[in-house]
Amino acid sequence: MKTQALAQGDKLPGDIKLNYFDKESNMQEISIEELTKGKKVVMLAVPGAFTPTCSLKHLPGFVEKYDELKAKGVDTIACVGVNDAFVMDAWGKSIDVGDKILLLADGSAIFTKAIGAELDLTDKGLGLRSRRYTMLVDDGVVKALNLEEGGAFTVSSADNILAGL
Image 1 (cartoon, rainbow, N blue to C red):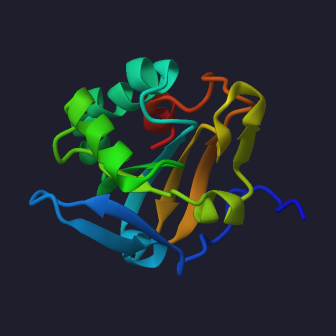
Image 2: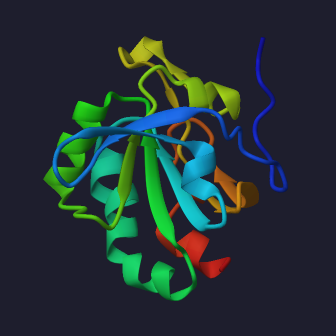
């Protein structure tokens, strides 16, 4: 059964949990509700850590625009990938995101499937991944959504989400 893709005005599924590594290199778990409750969050998703567009353009754009996003009232910038937490952590270190971006692992694509953003890249040897997107979430509700088709990178840039703030 195909899940309808998330839309502006929808509430995110708060009970789903994602993993990340904290500053002390301890694996942590956070629910979508904990991540977004009472906060303005920019969430971005990538088809894969260490892939060219994600590593050279998408994620670095958010590191570069961090101060501007924070100045516009964004509490947290979180990047979701259908990778395990070890891969997401290593990828973040390779790009030097520091503590600007929270790298969240959706290893089994549970969150990705729940919001209808899955992308089947089996034919490219990558399995089930996430479509690339950015969204502005305010207290768990999607205020803006820029969902890419396929592996495109046309509407999900940091500049594009900044323009809407």
